[in-house]
Each structure stands twice: as C-alpha cells, then as structure tokens.
Length: 275
Ligand SMILES: [Zn+2]
Image (cartoon, rainbow, N blue to C red; front, side, top):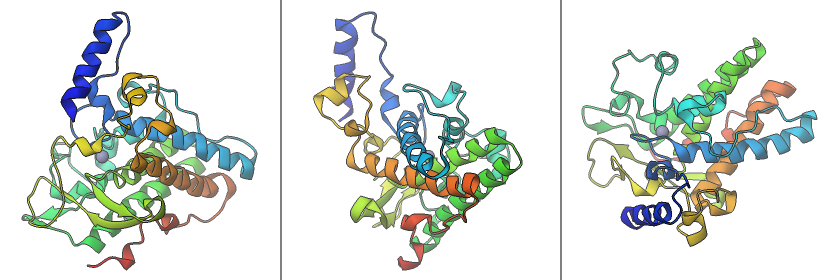
C-alpha cells in the first residue's frame, strides 16, 4: 500500500520539478512519527461545517477558519496546535494530563486513551467500557477547559483545548485505533491497543497504513491540492462530521450559554459496551 504511493510521488516530482509535494507522512492521521497532516484537514473541514451551523444560531462564525495546507508544527491556528500537540506534546499538554516532562508519551500505558486506544498496566489492557469512559472523560475535560478559558477571555487557550478534544475524537474514527459501526460510525465496537500484544484484541502497529485518510482514487492521490471532503475515506468523512458536531456542541456552551451535551451526541455511548 505504501510503495506505489511513494512511487507516484517520485513520478510527480520528476515530471514537474518546481512543484512541491507534501511529504508521504502527511497522508496519515496517526500518532507517532511525521506531522499529523490528516488531523489538520479533518479539523479544517469540521471547522467550516461547525461555523456554518453556529452562524445560524449566533449570527457569526466563531472559529478561525483553517487554511489548506496548514501544518500543526508551525501553525498560528490554536485549534490546529492543540490538535497537533496531542501527538507531539508541549509542557502545557503534559501538565494537563498530569504527566512528568520525561514521560514516554507514545508508549506509556497510562495515556493511551489520549489517542482513543486502551490504557494498560502490567501488560493488561483496561476493559472496553472503562476504556471508552477514559476517552470520553478526556474529551469532556478538554471541552470544559476550553469553555472556562473562553469565559476568562483566553480565546487562544480555549481554541487550543477544543483542538485537543477534536484530536481524541478523530483518532476514535481511525480503524487502527478503534472499531466503529452503524450510521455515521456513531457506535463503538472495540478499542484497540498499542505497544502490547493481547491475543484476540485489535492492535495499532507502530506505522499503520490504516491511519491514512485519503481515498486511493487517482485524482485524490495524484493531486496534492485535491484535499476536499469527497477525497476523504468514509471513516475520515465520519470523523469530520463527529468533530463538527462536537464543535457545535461546545460552541453552544461557549457562545450561546447552552449546557454542554455530555453524551457527546452519542458518539461515546460507553454504558452500552461490555466491560
Ligand atoms: Zn493521536
């Protein structure tokens, strides 16, 4: 799956020398090495949708739109930064999760839920329902922090924590992290592990091609500017919709004084899962 894509990029760069391609790693929405390109595009499309919906409620578009091609590592957009730093944590992110500076962010069993994976201890993964609750709690904690920050006038901080929550939601739509089903993939079927082997349980490999978000259609692969909704794989489209729903939900609390829907619109119905 990976090799033809690399070859395609090489062909493209050979045929038009001045053209600058996105690195191959930008096609992923994974934790681990490489910029979290996929998350940025999913968030960009979700912000547009959330702004559309919120404009109808409050009369303006509250979230700064995200430019195409923005990269988390050097962005001025706080929502993209909070999203990006979920995989590449700053001090601020580590403190939020009460982790020491030298934490092994990607491998520590206590903080796998940050990527919608199962936490583990002593080689034993957390049960399905508790894993779901840990993920949902993370999203709600970030949402509450965002609401408090906006209320205190700290807009940048508010956007940052919305971006963090969005990342956790988005990871739960990657088949390498969680299994979802039903209309819009609203229902969680399973939550996978990373870094340990558990017989019978789905596993996120350290470089996992299932993290890719773009369709393999010729036009979606060959044209790096073709980064619209229609080029997203089904699960990535569902991730856009879930992220937009969350941003509308949180936006209702931030900008219209509504109560936060703590069920997260049914995307984390943990109580119905087996322990
Ligand atoms: Zn992640």
